[in-house]
Image 1 (cartoon, rainbow, N blue to C red):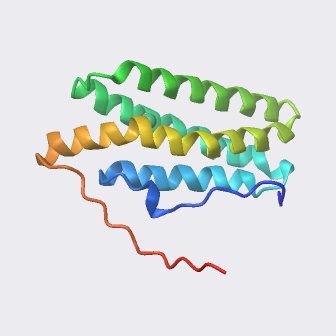
Image 2 (cartoon, rainbow, N blue to C red):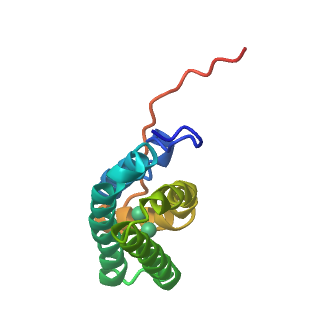
Length: 149
Ligand SMILES: [Fe+2]
Ligand SMILES: [Fe+2]
């Protein structure tokens, strides 16, 4: 198990209010965390799962943006394509005998996801809620007790 980096874990702070997107994001976080916590020799099957997930995840968002003519869709779709290319490339390296490349990718995805969700997915979530429900997204977060010492 990797102990050098804290792995990502799901937090209600990631909730954006559009249910289908939030469910997908929860699965994405699980895929990344699984690689962060795996031994290199176990990463290939996890990379397969990540690639399958990311392909469907990004395609779903791209489809929503295209179907509803979401105005700022180009940069969002470009970012998806770039990340998918990175995942595909690292999976290929793992197949060729370099599974140690998987952890740095997972760490980079853990760093990338919160900002992508904040800046791009949140706008799409608002847009989809407006179109589907004629409403703003409502997010209910479990309260967290903060203990200071
Ligand atoms: Fe997303
Ligand atoms: Fe996205």
